[in-house]
Length: 107
Length: 119
Image (tube, rainbow over all chains, first blue to last red; front, side, top):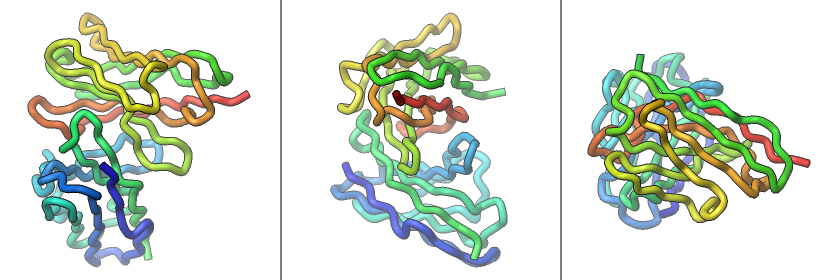
């Protein structure tokens, strides 16, 4: 299942809201996760089952969507939120696929 | 502390072999499904291979099937990836990742180990 993220790069000012998009070529139900990845660090699970926050993830991160269209929203960007973000489908387990990523950068 | 620590990466010529290791700590290793995921330079994440939680089922991406072998040693809390017949396109940072029980997302990742395949 091909996953497409947009935009490739998103420039947002601290304190503002960011919305990242992920689209599946075919329905994945709600079997979708979002990860944050910073250079040299381990990726971190943010959201699973499309809208459930992982343990310890701040409430400013939220996920929505089902079927083929999903959104990760960060309500008020903090400096530590600027990173790469990936979506991943696991509906076709174990043939997981990831999106190509969205780079969230400081405007 | 709950963590995964990869090792074994390095430089290898095309056609060569390498074995990666992932040492797990802080959780019951044998209860959890585990995977290897890689990231080639400038590219996104690609799932490579997985090992089931209970039992010994293994799974591979088409791009590595027949060349890579995943295994684990529960007595050492370690996951392995034996990589044979390496190609330039296998150059990537390789991460191990853990599935929480009953879920198919990855709730814990290591920091990765770099594999470079070049002549």
